[in-house]
Amino acid sequence: MLCYPFLAAAGVAQYSRGAGLVVGYLLLVAVSTCYLALVVATMRTAWRAYWWLLAVMAVLAVLVAPLARENTLILAAVIVPSAAARVGGRTASALVVLGAAACVAVPTLVPGWSTGPSWYYAVAVVFTALLVHAFSRTATANQQLREARAEVARLASEAERNRIARDLHDLLGHSLTAITVKSTLARKLAVSASPAALAELESVEQLSRQALADVRAAVSGYRDVTLAGELARGRELLRAAGVVADLPTACDVVPQERQELFGWVVREGVTNVVRHARAGRCAVELTATSVEVRDDGVGDQPRTGSGLDGLRARVTAAGGLLTAGPVQPCGWSLRVEASA
Image (tube, rainbow, N blue to C red):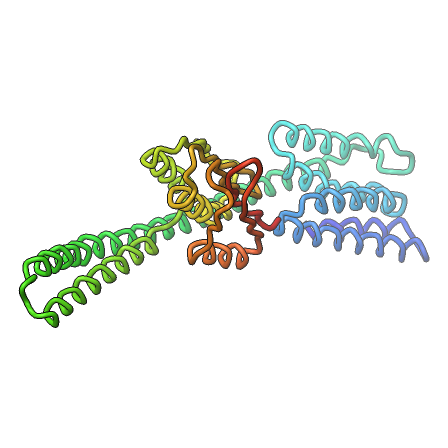
């Protein structure tokens, strides 16, 4: 499409002299520059700049028209398909038809221009529009293919993590649980043994319990945290604790890039409610930029610890803001505001 301004330049050379020739060439250079900026705006999905650039190109085409005359119509093969590519559908078809019709009619209506219809300009508009449409469909298909490949890779990675977590739980978890149970039984049976033997058995029991807790923590770390999963988990946890759960049934309002972070917030908030709040009701409120876990329990008790500290560090790393504290008339609130 960058060749079209050169065709318009032939008209400037044919119909203009002196300063008009220089001005015409400069205007066509500006048109080419705007088109290159249009391509950049498309790659960056800067659609507001896209429409401004199209408007500037249209104004430049009008300004160059007295200098290039009917040759200016070739610029319609740049402007009309670019506009049609953005609007799509029937509107795009109407734009192409109107642009082609204008290329046929305008030369016969403007004095001093060609006396016959410029069919080749109309053909250029239609052909370029079809070409741009084909390239657009190809680019869209390629983008969808890249997204599909990325999703397949993500699902494969998630499946592998879940497999490792399942193996850790099934193998080490079972063995460590058996060690814990047997060491507890052995300690009870060894009441008459020496104090040193009892101390060793108690040490084995403590080590096995700690190892079991570490395995469970590792398994939890391997599993992805999702907002939908944590809402479902939180609902069951609250129900088991006898707390009325007022949790959203869907999380579509939250952008995909914030769902994992909000899932951690819901996990920590609901866990704290069950452990510390002595609440009768717990509610979770979601927006596109924030999540809040609120209960009606004991609000004057500080709820600090490694879980909340770790969550604060995670939120800070993501550029968000965490606030936690008692609310009136009673209860506690954990709220995270994500960066815009």
